[in-house]
Length: 154
Image (cartoon, rainbow, N blue to C red):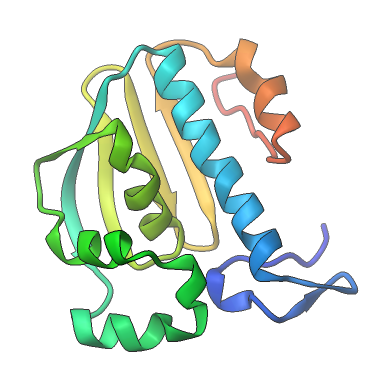
């Protein structure tokens, strides 16, 4: 096991002799988002449902806390932080914005498509995807994106 970063707040810190830059952070985050989109496409999932939305901070405090990472937060993302509600349908064009907020621990939420797909994004940059169909054929694609896959179905 090696020491590795686990949060956006680790940007600027050194892990295994290498500084975590905004660019390398975003590259990993992009990989997580790509995996979600790949699996949605594979399962023919047109949208996701969002429930139990919890915001980590009131909006003004959130804006202050993210000021060190302003290049990672678009105006759209900040607006989305304050507007997403329980039982909202998350259309494909907003998957990136919402899941980035989850990965950054800015919000917490259940996110799923009934009977096909459930995504868990939690503390320490952990993502788990439960599906109605085996993802064995996709594991090599996911690993090519630089992510580690642990198969719990066996």
